[in-house]
Length: 306
Image (cartoon, rainbow, N blue to C red; front, side, top):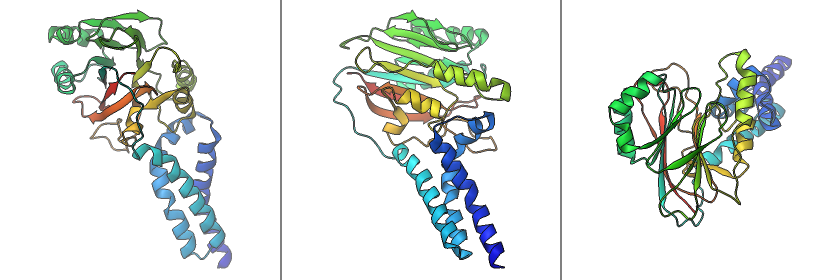
């Protein structure tokens, strides 16, 4: 009986130990792990049940190991729910809105209503096919955002401020904005990276993550916004963040607010839509918004430029 208690206790603890090791390894190893690691916040919550079960089975070593794994996983999430300090930015405010329209299923007037509600200055739109783009223009998007540029993968950038478009990674639009009152131009990248939907897209996902432009903390301030198809539990995305960005959701303590899938889906939500801002930029506000017709929620951020 004692032996079976030991086997059962370690069987309960071992998956969480393995998950912790893989998560800390800094590798996005294998297609299934790319998908599974996105659910680390849920695993972290469940992990605390394993040491309790081991204690009930009177197996102290397994309980200690399980508690260590749970504390490590939980510790990884703490920065996402605690607000961070802000840099002493004194420039103008730039309001950013990002929305994935699920290949045009979101009604154009609802997107425009959200843009007005958030008083967006820059709008990053993903999965906006040409037909829907035309309808959006008929509804008056160019009256709100007279400056626009289209990228690959149906990604479009709209802006109130004039900009110069530049060379961008696949699925992105890259532009240098001339924001009134700013000390220098600001680079904005509307992001839509490859989604790891099946094994054949694993390489595409890795490449598109690696192509995201690094921050330039000593140069032009840069903002990335869009559908990254990656969470902060992916090593590739953390690598981009570590170059000098801050995640707007994490800064405002909202780093666990799921953006995909939207309500009505059967499995837990994860955070794959982001606004990354140069660490010199203050994040005054961040919010997640329901988007009718889409499987994503829109995200908005109010940023104060240096």
